[in-house]
Structure formats: C-alpha cells, structure tokens
Length: 521
Image (cartoon, rainbow, N blue to C red; front, side):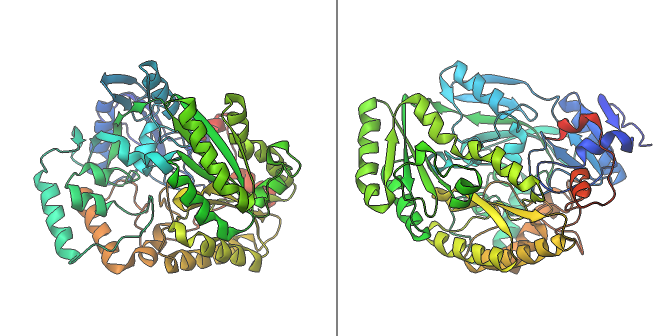
C-alpha cells in the first residue's frame, strides 16, 4: 500500500488489478505503475509532487494515453491529469486550457469566438492539451502554422519545489534560468549544431531557449521530465473563410521534394503523403478519388486556404498547372469533397487492420522520424531497404511537407523472432537517420523508446547539455526518469510487446485486463 500524500484530493489507486489501464498507451509498450493518482485540482498536484520529491518516488505525468513511444508509462506513480479539464477564453486571441482538457474542447472554445487553434494533431478528439505541450506536438497543418510551441504563450507548471507558477514568454529570466543559460553557453562554445529540420520533438529545445532566454521554451516538449504542466495558454488565429484541396499523383519518391516546394510556393496549409502500400493494403486501388493519378509511389494531398473563393481557386489552379505533368492532379473546393479527400487515410485503416490482424500487428517503434525535406528520397529509399532486408511489411504515410513520415511496421507476432527483428530494424533506422541529419521524433517525443539513442543522434556535447537541463530543473530526478535521457543500461525495447493483446497473439502468458482498458486510449 502507498500512503496517501498529505493534502492530496482525488483517487489514489495502487491495486495491480486496477492499474492495468495505465500500464499501456497507444503504442506497443506496457509497464505496470506502482500506483495511479487522479488529482482533482492544482493544489493536489502540488501536494503529490511535494510527497514524491520527499520520498524519491518517480512521477509519470499522463493525459489521454495517446502517446506512442512510452513516455506516459512507468513504474512509479502515474499522474492522470484528466480531472483538470476546464477551458476558457481569457483575453482576445488567447485561450487557457487546463492540462487534462482535450484539444478538441480547446478548439471548440476558440471557435465560439470566431478563432481557431490551427496546429492540432489528428488525435485532437482524444489527446489532451497538456500532452500537446509536453510533446511539442504538431499536425497536418503545422506545414504552414508550425508546431505547438509557436502557439503557446505560457504554461502553468509545478516543479520540484511543489509551488504552482506560470512561466511566460518575455518574463525576466529567474536566477535558475540565468545560471542554466550561462552554463549551456559555456558547454556549447560557438554556434549550436542543430538539425536542419522543419520541426523536432526530440531532446530539449536548446536552440529556442538560448535565443530567447524563456524557460517556457524548455518546458515545451519536455515530456514531463522537468515537472508537471497543469495548464496551457494558447494563442489563436482567425478561421480561414475558404479551403481547397488537391490530390497529386506521386510517380516516384524523387518527386516528393518538388511537390513540397510547390506546396510551399502556393502557401499551402498542409502537404501530406499517403504511400502506395497504404493505398493497396487499404483496398483503395480502384477508388474514384484517385482516378487518373499516377500513384506508383502514392499520392500527395495539398490543402490551401484563403479569404475568398477566388483566392483559393487561384492557388488550386497554380497547383494543377505545375503538378499535372508530374503525376496528375485532382482539385476541389467543395466542402464534402474536401472531407472525402482528407479521409483517404482513415478509410484505409479498417481494412489494413483487418488484413494485418490475421497474423500481424502494427508496432510503432520507428514511427516518427524527421529528416530535411531534401533528404526525403534518401530516407525513404534507405528505410525501405532496411525493412525489405528483414522481410518486414510496413504502411508509410505522413507529413511530407515537414520531412516527417510515420512508419507502421507490420510484424508477425506468431514468429518467435519478432522482437529480435524489431531490435535490428530499430538499430539500423537510427544509424540512417543520424547519417541524414534528422532526428527520431518530429512530433511525438523521445519517450522511453528513443531515449537510449539520444547521444547517437545528437552527439556527446549536446547530450551533455540536455543532461545539464535535466539536472538543473529536476535536481531530485523524480520527474519521468528514463524519458528523453536514458537511465544507466536502459533498453529501448523494455516493455515492448508485453501488453495482453500482444502476449495473446504471441501465445504467451496473458496479463489480466480490466473493463477500464478503454481509459488508456
């Protein structure tokens, strides 16, 4: 039994029969927590932090459990923040959302006053605002609007001193921040070597912090390793009046950088790629939406927006004129057809799941790499070679405009060697990404999965700087240990494939799952 922290209001569950739903998440990792806490308010978060620091018990902040790389599971106390779910408009153009509020509810509040949150991920209906800030999440429209950090004005946080406070952009840097900035500058003489990628959710944001001096830049994307984010102050933008979408054929991988450049030239809001394997496995080969397109390497979706129909039509016309000779193009500004074009990936998903489910399972262990857009062809070529050499099928799609491709390897769980195959593929992919100057996460974070590879990607100097950030802002080390920075001897695949449904398919021992399983997703 875990003693109840003084002044803590909310449920504290330490019965292993009831904590299973918080042992897993959307990805393939499963780790049983010591307990699960559901604080009812910020003061209760502070009370729990004070208690955890005093007793040296790890805290794992968690929202809706939609994260994939294991950053929201652990063997300490999982801190489920979903009771903190209030959203309000606090100023013109500014929404305040507590960490447990869903992104969709924050967006709905903004739209009530004619505003929008443009950079939300596709999981907006389920994921929490705190999770978006903790991962520096992004989405399809981040191509134009940027990741979450571009829209976060301030964060409400509870650090190791257990004192709730707000860190804002432009605040005078405090003594801790000033000392940290001075130490980092001394550790990193000369220009900071940083990957030339459009977005990055790996490591700590040293690039932004050293420019701005705003400690909020370190908290964004910190994955619960510096403290607990309890609220997010979000800037909003006006809602575009008109939209249009173009579907473009992609005849070969070398065409992708040209299509991304075209999307950039027309000021597109999104530039997405759906790979040919997604289309084929999803049973969309004869779909009328793809008629007339050369989709040998999939299709690209470009969305444009503007104040008037004429503006949107002009952008679509330019896309059509320039893309037709590449692989064909279909355009629409009809609202229902726009939704139909966007739904291609989701329409494919049930069939892919059914086909894979007979013997295989989608296992997202290399799902979020990002490379410079110019390196996309080399990245995809190398990735496909690695997968083929291990006889692994995969569904590929994602944010081509940002060089951020999502990979869903389909592994045969009835094959006793499947974990070894995953390890070999992961090791080789890390080497490839490092060689191409990318990082292992564009929007989902390092989690536990990618932490052991941080030095391989970032090098010794930057990794030591990351360690300085962690040591300075979390001197007790209780916040999400093993995330972003690995613990000694940490295995990237610890807990991989140990969820009950994995074990059942692998004909191994099955851990009991409760009826509350749905709460983990």
